[in-house]
Every structure is written in C-alpha cells, then in structure tokens.
Amino acid sequence: MAFVAEDKRLYDYMTVEQIVRFTKTFFPRWNHGFERRLMEQFELPPKRRIRQLSKGMRTKLALLLGFARNCELLILDEPTEGLDPVAIEDVLQILVSLAAEGTTVFFSSHQIVEVEQIADHVLMIDHGHLVMDAPMDQVKEQYRHIQAVFPDPVDERDFRLPGIETIQAKGCAVSLVASHNVDSILEHFHMLRAANVDVAPLSLKEIFLGKVKARS
Image 1 (cartoon, rainbow, N blue to C red):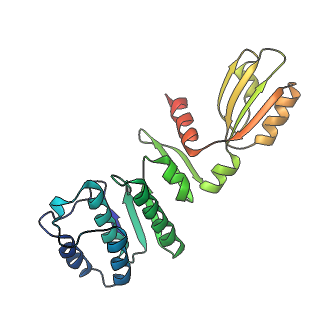
Image 2: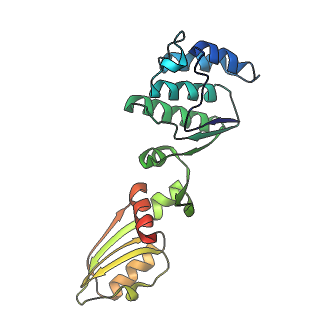
Image 3: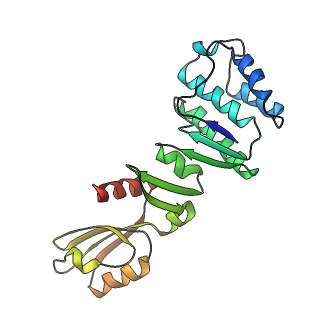
C-alpha cells in the first residue's frame, strides 16, 4: 500500500532524484517505467533539492513516490493540493487509470467537483458525522431537486414521505431534495394538484451543502 499525507512530508535535504532512488529500494514491485513517465509528465527537476521545490512540485513528487510503488491500495489525503488546473487533470486521469488496472484508491478531498469526476463511491463527513455513504452512480441517478407550486398554501407536514431529505414550504411553493422514491413523491404532488413541477439533477456539491445546512 501507499499513503500520501496532506502535509507531503519529504526529506528536504535530498534532491528529487535522491529521494526517488532511496524510496524505490524498499518496494520490489516499483514500476520504473511509470516513474520515468511521471518525472517527465510532472516536469520534476531531478537535481533540485526538495527544500527548494514549490508546494505544487512537492505534491507531484509525493504522488510519484506513491504511484510508482505499484501498490494494491493507495490512500491519498488532498492529492491535488497546490496544483494548477492542468496538473490536477493529469493527476485525476492517473487515478482513474490506476483504478482501472485494479488498484483500490481511497482519497479524501474538499474539492467536491474532483470527487464527483472520478469517484465510484462517496462518503460525506460533516463535523465527524457520516452523512452519506453511497455509490456515485446511485447518487447521480436518484438525487433530485423538486420544485412545485400548489393552488393552495401547503405545509411541510404535508410531505412526510420516504426519500425526502430536506424541504422548504412557503405559501403555495415547495422546494425539496429527494434521495430516492422520486416517482412516489411526484404522484403525491399531483394528488395535491401541483402545477409547474420542475425536477432537476443535483451536483455532489449541492447535495453536500444541503446536508450540511440540514444539520445546522
């Protein structure tokens, strides 16, 4: 396994090529070809001392030392911290490739767009509490934002149905987030003679913000 921590701890007195040479002696499955490819792709300066590297370069070096181990489990904490948009896309594509080749990748990130882009299972944590644990495909298929207008004023108590995560009712208008059971919720809306019903998918960021606000 390989673990790349958020602080990207490295031996500052070494050069880039020295720490690569030092690290790979511990890992018999080290992928030398992948190492060379990443050195070039990440544009890492072999002769430069680590203390002289920028934050982004330190991140790239730490990732190289983890990626090239050819490990079965890869654990990453904020893997794109300090990287520019091009480098971020490179790292995300590498993670997708590693997963496709059989590596289990477990990573934590505050960059929710990146999580949505590559993860196949997502866990959301808010102040130490697990608020979601679901496959990404299920999240994309089932989570919906539903808005409707009714002929008469309604109350939130009129919508105590399975699948409704959050709801706001104001006068004749209702806005809610559903995690599942959308068809039954829409049938209930029509039974109450709803008009102008709008159903839209939610991004992972919108879902997270909704769950955090619901807990506050």
